[in-house]
Image (cartoon, rainbow, N blue to C red; front, top):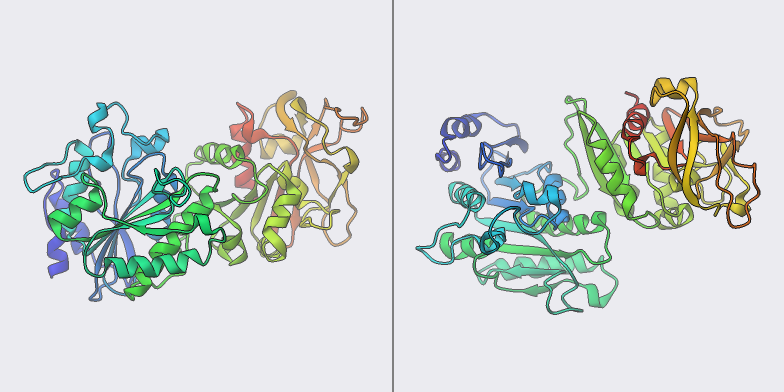
Length: 495
């Protein structure tokens, strides 16, 4: 009853909805949404409650306070799907939605003195939150009365390299137990960090005006700020570092019943398409970002960026499609290693979808020692793979127009050293089908002319129970071809 009593507090006129959420029975470790905070304003955002229905600590996780610190928001979104064996977990994944959407640290359209959300919380007993959103978050924390609060942030640089930044650190409140937990989290996380200068260190206390400092000083909540580092690190890596720290912490409390690489919910009754975008070695910076933007146009889609540990560890089983973006296929293959490549092959063989763009098409092909060999296509004129970049024209086949984009005639599309494909004649793999052909070409750096024209630009194939889509050019970085990308992913997912 004490736990329910915490939730039956009124704020922003949502008392009825909060009570209904609180009194609604949950199965063991089930997550459900609480009432939105800052409801009816542009700052409105959603929090989630996972109640084990067993005695234990109350823990709150917050991500996305600063809009350019995307990994914390992503990690919190993953964590809210974890199963909890005792106590309660309250997760606010996207605290500062307008700033996250703008990828800006500060709150848009507020005066400079109030634009840093993490300086807008009470500094003393008489101080009040300084803006609508900080008030809503502060009211949520006060109503939930968590025993622990972990705020997920990112620094610009590694603190051991640049002392002006707090990146790669845990900033702990000066309270009993907090330092012990932080040091345990550091030991576990630093086992995954090879460079001594990039290892995480303990700092503290949180700065005045921050949520962590206010909750510790005003509410006696045990708090930590977890800081990853944005510099020269993929979002997938930083997001996983947050998950490692939080998983270690919850494990030490005996609360967590999920693996740290649970990224989505296990209830597929929503019929959402679950897409994993490979975002690690060999991938260009823009590809994953462009794909995420395009896929937002699918009405019901869940997109996660994944790295080698997630793929090798079996996390693809949570998804319908894995996407390999542009970059360097050989470097992608090297980073994935035998285990990662094998995991993708088995995922597709067992019914998963694969979508490869440029480098991802090379990776899927049949005739490199490092390729996945999941489509009956070989790369020809391999000597002249670096043919150049620029606009080319493609033409969709009838089947291409039916599956991808009902547009006749020539279509301009970006090309950047994509593979020139031909049948591999592998008796163990069904023949591919061309959905588009090149009608113009790029032949720079000594590449012979005439080789590229009329070869397949976009193909589909089957491998085991799964579907394979490969595009030599880049529809995901060509304005106007967003529908083609979305339909490709839907086709690969069997939708």
